[in-house]
Length: 312
Ligand SMILES: NC(=O)c1ccc[n+]([C@@H]2O[C@H](COP(=O)([O-])OP(=O)(O)OC[C@H]3O[C@@H](n4cnc5c(N)ncnc54)[C@H](OP(=O)(O)O)[C@@H]3O)[C@@H](O)[C@H]2O)c1
Image (cartoon, rainbow, N blue to C red; front, side, top):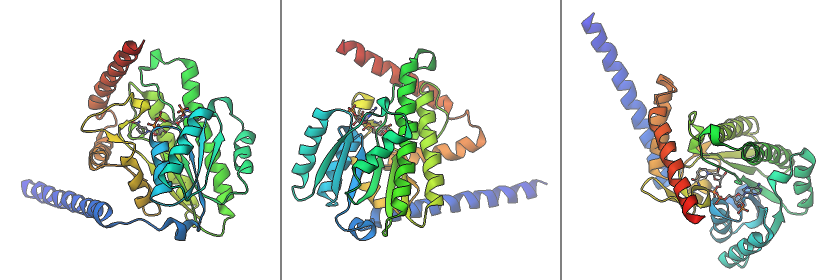
Protein backbone atom coordinates (compact mmCIF):
# COMPACT_ATOMS: atom_id res chain seq x y z
CA UNK A 1 0.00 0.00 0.00
CA UNK A 2 2.77 2.44 1.04
CA UNK A 3 4.74 1.46 -2.06
CA UNK A 4 1.68 2.17 -4.26
CA UNK A 5 1.16 5.64 -2.68
CA UNK A 6 4.83 6.36 -3.21
CA UNK A 7 4.50 5.51 -6.88
CA UNK A 8 1.39 7.70 -7.28
CA UNK A 9 3.21 10.63 -5.59
CA UNK A 10 6.20 10.05 -7.89
CA UNK A 11 4.11 10.19 -11.07
CA UNK A 12 2.00 13.14 -9.88
CA UNK A 13 5.23 14.99 -9.04
CA UNK A 14 6.65 14.15 -12.45
CA UNK A 15 3.46 15.38 -14.14
CA UNK A 16 3.52 18.70 -12.20
CA UNK A 17 7.23 19.27 -12.97
CA UNK A 18 6.56 18.52 -16.66
CA UNK A 19 3.66 20.98 -16.69
CA UNK A 20 5.72 23.73 -15.06
CA UNK A 21 8.59 23.08 -17.51
CA UNK A 22 6.24 23.36 -20.51
CA UNK A 23 4.69 26.58 -19.09
CA UNK A 24 8.17 28.00 -18.51
CA UNK A 25 9.19 27.08 -22.07
CA UNK A 26 6.20 28.98 -23.47
CA UNK A 27 7.00 31.92 -21.17
CA UNK A 28 10.59 32.12 -22.49
CA UNK A 29 9.48 31.79 -26.11
CA UNK A 30 6.82 34.50 -25.69
CA UNK A 31 8.92 36.99 -23.75
CA UNK A 32 12.31 36.61 -25.42
CA UNK A 33 11.75 35.36 -28.96
CA UNK A 34 8.28 36.31 -30.19
CA UNK A 35 8.18 39.41 -32.40
CA UNK A 36 4.44 39.64 -33.09
CA UNK A 37 2.78 39.85 -36.49
CA UNK A 38 3.35 42.67 -38.96
CA UNK A 39 0.01 44.43 -38.50
CA UNK A 40 0.00 45.94 -42.00
CA UNK A 41 0.58 42.58 -43.62
CA UNK A 42 -1.89 40.73 -41.41
CA UNK A 43 -4.73 43.26 -41.08
CA UNK A 44 -4.32 45.45 -44.16
CA UNK A 45 -1.94 48.20 -45.21
CA UNK A 46 -2.76 51.68 -43.86
CA UNK A 47 -5.76 50.43 -41.91
CA UNK A 48 -7.07 52.02 -38.71
CA UNK A 49 -7.20 51.04 -35.06
CA UNK A 50 -10.20 52.23 -33.01
CA UNK A 51 -9.46 52.59 -29.29
CA UNK A 52 -12.18 53.32 -26.73
CA UNK A 53 -11.20 55.21 -23.58
CA UNK A 54 -8.27 56.70 -25.51
CA UNK A 55 -8.09 59.95 -23.52
CA UNK A 56 -6.11 58.59 -20.56
CA UNK A 57 -4.21 55.68 -19.05
CA UNK A 58 -3.80 52.45 -21.02
CA UNK A 59 -5.95 53.68 -23.93
CA UNK A 60 -3.86 56.82 -24.49
CA UNK A 61 -0.57 54.91 -24.18
CA UNK A 62 -1.82 52.34 -26.67
CA UNK A 63 -2.96 55.06 -29.10
CA UNK A 64 0.52 56.63 -29.05
CA UNK A 65 2.23 53.23 -29.36
CA UNK A 66 -0.03 52.21 -32.28
CA UNK A 67 0.93 55.41 -34.10
CA UNK A 68 4.63 55.55 -33.24
CA UNK A 69 5.73 51.92 -33.27
CA UNK A 70 3.13 50.28 -35.53
CA UNK A 71 2.38 53.17 -37.90
CA UNK A 72 -1.37 52.61 -37.63
CA UNK A 73 -3.97 55.31 -38.24
CA UNK A 74 -5.84 55.91 -35.00
CA UNK A 75 -9.46 56.67 -34.06
CA UNK A 76 -9.61 57.92 -30.47
CA UNK A 77 -12.98 57.43 -28.79
CA UNK A 78 -13.72 59.28 -25.54
CA UNK A 79 -16.40 61.19 -23.73
CA UNK A 80 -14.63 64.52 -23.19
CA UNK A 81 -13.95 66.77 -26.20
CA UNK A 82 -11.06 68.69 -24.61
CA UNK A 83 -9.32 65.50 -23.51
CA UNK A 84 -9.88 64.02 -26.97
CA UNK A 85 -8.22 66.99 -28.66
CA UNK A 86 -5.29 66.88 -26.24
CA UNK A 87 -4.88 63.12 -26.76
CA UNK A 88 -5.05 63.55 -30.54
CA UNK A 89 -2.22 66.11 -30.36
CA UNK A 90 -0.09 63.63 -28.40
CA UNK A 91 -0.76 60.85 -30.91
CA UNK A 92 0.07 63.15 -33.85
CA UNK A 93 3.29 64.19 -32.10
CA UNK A 94 4.19 60.51 -31.64
CA UNK A 95 4.00 60.02 -35.43
CA UNK A 96 3.07 62.96 -37.69
CA UNK A 97 2.79 60.66 -40.72
CA UNK A 98 -0.29 58.75 -39.60
CA UNK A 99 -3.91 59.91 -39.76
CA UNK A 100 -6.05 60.46 -36.65
CA UNK A 101 -9.71 61.00 -35.91
CA UNK A 102 -11.60 61.63 -32.68
CA UNK A 103 -15.07 60.38 -31.83
CA UNK A 104 -16.99 61.73 -28.85
CA UNK A 105 -19.12 59.10 -27.16
CA UNK A 106 -20.16 58.48 -23.55
CA UNK A 107 -21.04 54.88 -22.68
CA UNK A 108 -23.12 56.09 -19.72
CA UNK A 109 -25.53 58.05 -21.91
CA UNK A 110 -25.91 55.37 -24.55
CA UNK A 111 -27.42 51.99 -23.85
CA UNK A 112 -29.19 50.90 -27.05
CA UNK A 113 -27.79 48.92 -29.98
CA UNK A 114 -28.58 51.74 -32.45
CA UNK A 115 -26.32 54.30 -30.77
CA UNK A 116 -23.38 51.86 -30.89
CA UNK A 117 -24.16 50.93 -34.49
CA UNK A 118 -24.00 54.65 -35.32
CA UNK A 119 -20.30 54.68 -34.27
CA UNK A 120 -19.52 52.07 -36.91
CA UNK A 121 -21.70 53.82 -39.51
CA UNK A 122 -20.15 57.24 -38.85
CA UNK A 123 -16.74 55.64 -39.37
CA UNK A 124 -17.77 53.62 -42.43
CA UNK A 125 -15.26 55.35 -44.74
CA UNK A 126 -12.29 54.26 -42.66
CA UNK A 127 -10.79 50.80 -43.12
CA UNK A 128 -10.85 49.93 -39.42
CA UNK A 129 -9.10 46.60 -38.88
CA UNK A 130 -8.58 46.64 -35.13
CA UNK A 131 -10.88 47.49 -32.24
CA UNK A 132 -9.61 47.89 -28.68
CA UNK A 133 -12.42 47.85 -26.14
CA UNK A 134 -10.44 49.58 -23.41
CA UNK A 135 -12.86 52.06 -21.79
CA UNK A 136 -13.70 50.93 -18.30
CA UNK A 137 -14.82 52.19 -14.93
CA UNK A 138 -14.10 51.03 -11.37
CA UNK A 139 -15.10 52.22 -7.93
CA UNK A 140 -13.30 49.76 -5.65
CA UNK A 141 -15.29 49.41 -2.41
CA UNK A 142 -17.28 46.93 -0.30
CA UNK A 143 -20.59 46.09 -1.96
CA UNK A 144 -22.79 47.66 0.76
CA UNK A 145 -21.20 51.06 0.13
CA UNK A 146 -21.45 50.88 -3.68
CA UNK A 147 -23.93 53.43 -5.05
CA UNK A 148 -26.49 52.04 -7.49
CA UNK A 149 -25.69 54.68 -10.14
CA UNK A 150 -22.01 53.64 -10.03
CA UNK A 151 -23.02 50.02 -10.42
CA UNK A 152 -25.02 51.00 -13.51
CA UNK A 153 -22.05 52.96 -14.86
CA UNK A 154 -19.79 49.90 -14.50
CA UNK A 155 -22.39 47.63 -16.11
CA UNK A 156 -22.94 50.10 -18.93
CA UNK A 157 -19.26 50.71 -19.75
CA UNK A 158 -17.52 47.45 -18.87
CA UNK A 159 -20.24 45.02 -19.99
CA UNK A 160 -22.99 46.49 -22.15
CA UNK A 161 -20.94 48.90 -24.28
CA UNK A 162 -18.11 46.42 -24.71
CA UNK A 163 -20.52 43.64 -25.76
CA UNK A 164 -22.34 45.78 -28.30
CA UNK A 165 -19.13 47.07 -29.87
CA UNK A 166 -17.77 43.52 -29.99
CA UNK A 167 -20.90 42.35 -31.81
CA UNK A 168 -21.09 45.30 -34.22
CA UNK A 169 -17.41 45.18 -35.17
CA UNK A 170 -17.31 41.38 -35.34
CA UNK A 171 -20.05 41.62 -38.00
CA UNK A 172 -18.22 44.42 -39.81
CA UNK A 173 -14.89 42.59 -39.64
CA UNK A 174 -16.43 39.35 -40.92
CA UNK A 175 -17.01 41.16 -44.24
CA UNK A 176 -13.39 42.33 -44.64
CA UNK A 177 -11.11 40.41 -47.00
CA UNK A 178 -8.19 40.54 -44.58
CA UNK A 179 -8.13 39.28 -40.99
CA UNK A 180 -9.08 41.80 -38.29
CA UNK A 181 -8.55 42.03 -34.54
CA UNK A 182 -10.46 42.79 -31.36
CA UNK A 183 -8.65 43.36 -28.07
CA UNK A 184 -10.89 43.45 -25.02
CA UNK A 185 -9.34 44.83 -21.85
CA UNK A 186 -10.30 42.70 -18.86
CA UNK A 187 -8.30 42.51 -15.63
CA UNK A 188 -6.81 40.09 -13.13
CA UNK A 189 -9.84 41.12 -11.08
CA UNK A 190 -11.79 38.77 -13.39
CA UNK A 191 -9.92 35.57 -12.50
CA UNK A 192 -11.62 34.80 -9.20
CA UNK A 193 -14.64 36.13 -7.31
CA UNK A 194 -13.34 39.30 -5.70
CA UNK A 195 -14.80 40.27 -2.31
CA UNK A 196 -14.24 43.98 -1.76
CA UNK A 197 -14.46 44.77 -5.49
CA UNK A 198 -17.19 42.29 -6.39
CA UNK A 199 -19.10 44.00 -9.17
CA UNK A 200 -16.05 45.30 -11.06
CA UNK A 201 -14.45 41.84 -10.75
CA UNK A 202 -17.60 40.21 -12.09
CA UNK A 203 -17.68 42.64 -15.03
CA UNK A 204 -14.13 41.61 -15.95
CA UNK A 205 -14.96 37.89 -15.58
CA UNK A 206 -17.70 38.57 -18.14
CA UNK A 207 -15.16 40.19 -20.51
CA UNK A 208 -12.82 37.20 -20.22
CA UNK A 209 -15.56 34.70 -20.98
CA UNK A 210 -17.08 36.67 -23.87
CA UNK A 211 -13.73 37.36 -25.53
CA UNK A 212 -12.55 33.77 -25.46
CA UNK A 213 -15.85 32.34 -26.68
CA UNK A 214 -16.28 34.81 -29.55
CA UNK A 215 -12.58 34.52 -30.38
CA UNK A 216 -12.95 30.77 -30.84
CA UNK A 217 -16.17 31.08 -32.82
CA UNK A 218 -14.67 33.58 -35.26
CA UNK A 219 -11.11 32.27 -35.31
CA UNK A 220 -11.07 32.02 -39.12
CA UNK A 221 -11.56 35.78 -39.52
CA UNK A 222 -10.55 37.39 -36.24
CA UNK A 223 -7.63 37.57 -33.82
CA UNK A 224 -9.19 38.16 -30.41
CA UNK A 225 -7.13 38.88 -27.34
CA UNK A 226 -8.23 39.36 -23.76
CA UNK A 227 -5.72 41.67 -22.08
CA UNK A 228 -5.82 41.09 -18.31
CA UNK A 229 -3.34 43.17 -16.33
CA UNK A 230 -3.01 43.40 -12.56
CA UNK A 231 -2.58 46.90 -11.08
CA UNK A 232 -1.54 49.67 -13.50
CA UNK A 233 -0.52 53.23 -12.53
CA UNK A 234 -3.43 55.24 -13.95
CA UNK A 235 -6.24 57.51 -12.77
CA UNK A 236 -8.35 54.40 -12.14
CA UNK A 237 -6.04 53.28 -9.31
CA UNK A 238 -5.34 56.89 -8.24
CA UNK A 239 -1.85 56.42 -9.64
CA UNK A 240 -0.97 53.40 -7.53
CA UNK A 241 2.72 52.50 -7.63
CA UNK A 242 4.72 49.57 -6.26
CA UNK A 243 6.76 46.54 -7.29
CA UNK A 244 3.62 44.70 -8.44
CA UNK A 245 2.32 47.67 -10.48
CA UNK A 246 3.11 48.38 -14.15
CA UNK A 247 2.79 51.62 -16.11
CA UNK A 248 0.31 52.13 -18.93
CA UNK A 249 3.25 52.26 -21.35
CA UNK A 250 4.31 48.77 -20.16
CA UNK A 251 0.95 47.47 -21.41
CA UNK A 252 1.43 48.22 -25.11
CA UNK A 253 4.23 46.02 -26.45
CA UNK A 254 2.78 42.72 -25.20
CA UNK A 255 -0.63 43.37 -26.77
CA UNK A 256 0.84 43.53 -30.27
CA UNK A 257 3.35 40.77 -29.51
CA UNK A 258 0.66 38.28 -28.50
CA UNK A 259 -2.20 39.27 -30.81
CA UNK A 260 -2.94 36.30 -33.08
CA UNK A 261 -0.95 33.91 -30.86
CA UNK A 262 -2.67 33.96 -27.46
CA UNK A 263 -6.25 34.25 -26.25
CA UNK A 264 -5.23 36.13 -23.08
CA UNK A 265 -2.13 37.83 -21.73
CA UNK A 266 -0.62 40.02 -19.02
CA UNK A 267 1.92 42.85 -19.24
CA UNK A 268 4.64 41.63 -16.85
CA UNK A 269 6.30 38.52 -15.46
CA UNK A 270 4.86 39.18 -12.01
CA UNK A 271 1.34 39.60 -13.38
CA UNK A 272 1.77 36.35 -15.34
CA UNK A 273 3.05 34.60 -12.22
CA UNK A 274 0.00 35.64 -10.19
CA UNK A 275 -2.26 34.01 -12.79
CA UNK A 276 -0.04 30.92 -12.81
CA UNK A 277 -0.45 30.62 -9.01
CA UNK A 278 -4.14 31.47 -8.77
CA UNK A 279 -5.37 29.05 -11.45
CA UNK A 280 -4.48 25.75 -9.64
CA UNK A 281 -5.49 27.19 -6.25
CA UNK A 282 -8.95 27.92 -7.68
CA UNK A 283 -9.25 24.27 -8.70
CA UNK A 284 -8.74 23.19 -5.09
CA UNK A 285 -11.24 25.64 -3.59
CA UNK A 286 -12.55 28.84 -5.12
CA UNK A 287 -12.59 30.59 -1.73
CA UNK A 288 -8.88 29.97 -1.09
CA UNK A 289 -7.60 33.02 -3.04
CA UNK A 290 -9.95 35.18 -0.94
CA UNK A 291 -7.69 34.65 2.06
CA UNK A 292 -5.24 36.95 0.25
CA UNK A 293 -7.49 38.89 -2.14
CA UNK A 294 -10.11 40.05 0.37
CA UNK A 295 -7.63 41.78 2.76
CA UNK A 296 -5.77 43.14 -0.29
CA UNK A 297 -8.96 44.79 -1.59
CA UNK A 298 -9.66 46.12 1.94
CA UNK A 299 -6.22 47.78 2.03
CA UNK A 300 -6.68 49.15 -1.47
CA UNK A 301 -10.09 50.63 -0.55
CA UNK A 302 -8.52 52.32 2.48
CA UNK A 303 -5.60 53.70 0.44
CA UNK A 304 -7.98 55.14 -2.15
CA UNK A 305 -10.37 56.58 0.45
CA UNK A 306 -7.45 58.29 2.24
CA UNK A 307 -6.26 59.83 -1.02
CA UNK A 308 -9.77 60.97 -1.96
CA UNK A 309 -10.24 62.55 1.51
CA UNK A 310 -6.89 64.36 1.21
CA UNK A 311 -7.96 65.82 -2.14
CA UNK A 312 -11.18 67.25 -0.64
N1 LIG B 1 -5.53 50.63 -13.90
C1 LIG B 1 -5.55 49.36 -13.56
O1 LIG B 1 -4.96 48.95 -12.54
C2 LIG B 1 -6.24 48.36 -14.44
C3 LIG B 1 -6.01 47.00 -14.20
C4 LIG B 1 -6.64 46.05 -14.97
C5 LIG B 1 -7.50 46.44 -15.98
N2 LIG B 1 -7.72 47.77 -16.20
C6 LIG B 1 -8.65 48.12 -17.26
O2 LIG B 1 -7.96 48.89 -18.23
C7 LIG B 1 -8.88 49.74 -18.92
C8 LIG B 1 -8.32 51.15 -18.92
O3 LIG B 1 -8.23 51.61 -17.60
P1 LIG B 1 -7.16 52.68 -17.13
O4 LIG B 1 -6.48 52.13 -15.95
O5 LIG B 1 -6.37 53.16 -18.28
O6 LIG B 1 -8.18 53.78 -16.59
P2 LIG B 1 -8.28 55.36 -16.81
O7 LIG B 1 -6.93 55.98 -16.80
O8 LIG B 1 -9.28 55.80 -15.82
O9 LIG B 1 -8.86 55.48 -18.29
C9 LIG B 1 -10.13 54.99 -18.59
C10 LIG B 1 -10.54 55.52 -19.94
O10 LIG B 1 -11.88 55.09 -20.19
C11 LIG B 1 -12.68 56.26 -20.43
N3 LIG B 1 -14.04 56.10 -19.96
C12 LIG B 1 -14.45 55.77 -18.72
N4 LIG B 1 -15.79 55.77 -18.67
C13 LIG B 1 -16.22 56.11 -19.90
C14 LIG B 1 -17.50 56.32 -20.47
N5 LIG B 1 -18.61 56.20 -19.74
N6 LIG B 1 -17.59 56.67 -21.77
C15 LIG B 1 -16.47 56.84 -22.51
N7 LIG B 1 -15.23 56.68 -22.03
C16 LIG B 1 -15.12 56.33 -20.73
C17 LIG B 1 -11.97 57.36 -19.68
O11 LIG B 1 -12.40 58.63 -20.12
P3 LIG B 1 -12.20 59.95 -19.20
O12 LIG B 1 -10.74 60.31 -19.37
O13 LIG B 1 -13.12 60.94 -19.79
O14 LIG B 1 -12.55 59.55 -17.79
C18 LIG B 1 -10.53 57.03 -20.00
O15 LIG B 1 -10.20 57.46 -21.30
C19 LIG B 1 -10.22 49.62 -18.17
O16 LIG B 1 -11.06 48.74 -18.87
C20 LIG B 1 -9.81 49.01 -16.84
O17 LIG B 1 -10.85 48.29 -16.26
C21 LIG B 1 -7.10 48.74 -15.46
